Amino acid sequence: VNEPWRKTYDGGSTLVLDGGTGTELRRRGFKTSASAWSGLAPLTHYEALRDVHAEFIAAGADVVTTSTFGTTRFVLAAAGHESDFAKINARAVGAALEARAAAGRDVAIAGSISCLPPDFDARRYPREAAERAAYRELAETLAEAGVDLLLLEMMQETRHAPLALEAACATGLPVWLGVACRTSADGALVGYDFPLVSLEACLAATLPFAPDAVAVMHSRPEVVANALTAIAAHYRGTLGAYPELGDGRSDAAMDPAAFAAEALAWRAAGARILGGCCGTTPAHVRALAVALAGRS
Ligand SMILES: [Zn+2]
Image (cartoon, rainbow, N blue to C red; front, side, top):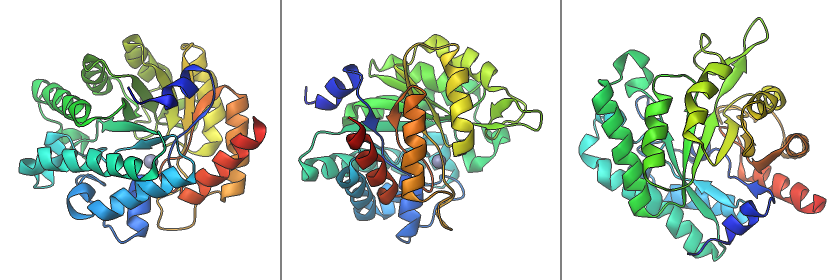
């Protein structure tokens, strides 16, 4: 198995994750879908997607994430592309595999799975059996296409996240849990889009699946330190952080140098998987990789 990245990881070194693939595509003219976010990019913008992965690898990413955040069968159905499920997911993994092969450097490919509801509308989830089957189908499809691990993204509540985690764990691949949170008016950490669900409740529903790593992701940089502390109170495995810096339509909330400095603080707080989510560019990842190399 071709995975020196895993030696780095198992050896306790820091892995550099990529930045925001969907927002990078947006900067190259891709119009994100109101139903499927970046889920249709593998179909309509394959070359741009491959190039975004390649740029993140060139910038120093050890892990790139597939553009499959919005490619469950029920999300693609809402976008009018259910019949393209196999093609879209094969091309999503293919773009990352192609970028890796061209780079000639061993990086891990993380298969993204989310609980994004159809049309971003939580009232429109399918019945539980269909939802469960859809996560299984996506997890198995990504595994068969050759991803190295599965990355559960935007986990932030207690009903849907366990279904996705169960499906990911059933593949036997390493599973990383990405939780998204924000600070409520009374100072508690709550789900990024679910202000009535505490981070504690989300962790209680998801940590029993024993993920191989837990990262705070798509959360504002200023909540990362508190979120890492909250996770570490219940979880002794590998921690990570890849916050969001904006929607990619305007300037990132932090410039690359400031982002790299913050990331070093998250590393000091225990995070060993570091990168960015929405709004994080290859320049941010490069600054992070350089800062980490300078430390070791
Ligand atoms: Zn994001």
